[in-house]
Length: 390
Image 1 (cartoon, rainbow, N blue to C red):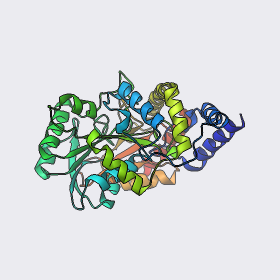
Image 2 (image 1 turned 180 degrees about the vertical axis):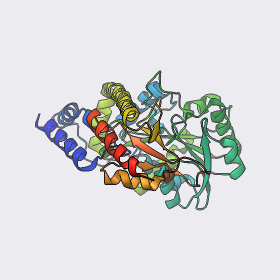
Image 3 (image 1 turned 90 degrees about the vertical axis):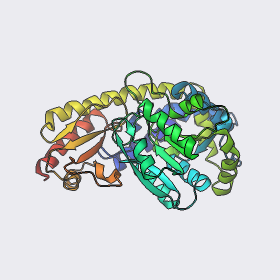
Image 4 (image 1 turned 180 degrees about the horizontal axis):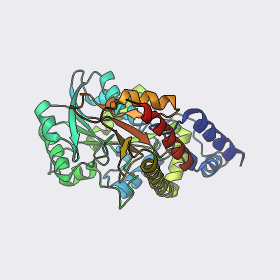
């Protein structure tokens, strides 16, 4: 009980000291199963199953097996536990991929707009970023081929494009895989929030399609990245990278040379959490919670923001894009919101190339990490802010 209280206290401190209404990247910390997690930790200590020595470069074997089983059932990933690497989140996976597969000045396709921290990690590695537009069908593969047909890597969020929310269509998926095989390029599939699809089953992943459609003798081209930051908590700093079998040995050697291994205690507890079915139940519970919170945001926005910000429902995810009325500049809206104690992200932050005029400005609003009261309070504050933004 004392352990559960300590975990809960840390959770409450994190929420009150860090989270502000609509801040991106905040999951439902109030829904984290603190008591259960504390019991699993205590059980490991009591049972003498806490390993305090050096870990495996690819991660705890039990956790890798649990992840392989889970993603096979939940996402249609086709892999063995040998292909799973435990990493410290998405950026760590991208850094490792960049070090192993890219040379300085290699071209890399990135979605435009797209995930900011992917671009930062790639730039730090010396890659040359090739912005590829996205539309209602996801990444425009034909545009990517026109810009850089011999790129070395393409980074995509096909199941729920960040930040616009599009699902990559089947023809685009097949075109992307076809290009990758012809160019002998790699595809990084960032599956950051696909488990939070509110109707029907999560969409099959690109990695499984790659395995299914490849011809005899073809090498798989997709590297699959997942994270526990959105499903559990960012503070764990745990995610996973699933590699084609032919890359496993070189990545293991690189990982051992760079940062050696992820924390062993957290890996062991997470292996128990997944293997005993707690993780799947937790995902189902927070998926329902996020759907409710999105509805709360939409209802409040309809009442308070209908003439100031246009929001539409999304079938998945943790945030919505709100479109500003004509003539309102994003930077003015963000500053006004900040003055009201609300944190929103401008869509332009995620673009590599300026939007074509007369494009409307957009704001990203996270609803997943905030309860109904915080969402309604945030909407009222946003109404005041946007009422004076120009």
